[in-house]
Image (cartoon, rainbow, N blue to C red; front, side, top):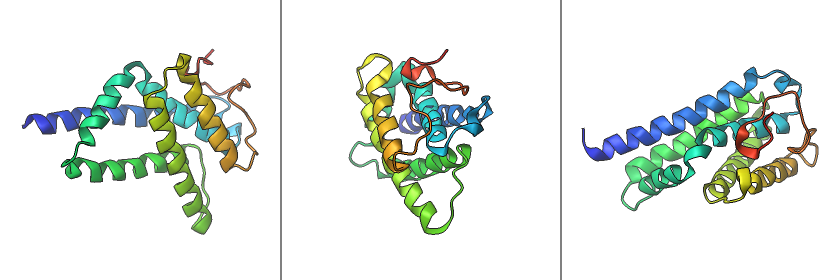
Amino acid sequence: MPAMHKKDDLAEAWFDRADRAALQVREGSGFLALPVAARLEHVILAWLGALQAHRRLTREMLGYKLEPGHLHLQIPGLMRISRTVQWFRETAQQDSRGLQRIFEETALTLVYVSTFARWLYDESPDARATCDYLARALRRLAGGRVGECPDKPTDAPRPDICGTNG
């Protein structure tokens, strides 16, 4: 197997690990009682939390995939983003339909990608700046109706990423 394929296989396995962490969030007690925006926050933070210990490695993997001439990696990468966002929505039980679903999915994709990009270079303790950014972005999406803010404790388990896991 060429080295290029091995690198991509490792990167895919790495992001699969984050996807699994996000999908497991729904198993926490109290998770389904949270408003949808708060559930989405938990799911995205779990995804980032699975990668937190090796953020520099994650940046390097993405850098490799984004090199010019790697369209064969970039196009599947776009499909991965779409699939991951679908899993976020499913895990958070964001089950709207029609035009509302299209709007929510598009907006969530933008929030996810911008949060991920911010997280890649976040040097704040426990990626707090990313956590705050995500909470604000989801609050804007929900029209300010996010029932739980990241600084308020909930019964649902929180990823260590924001330093709020207890």
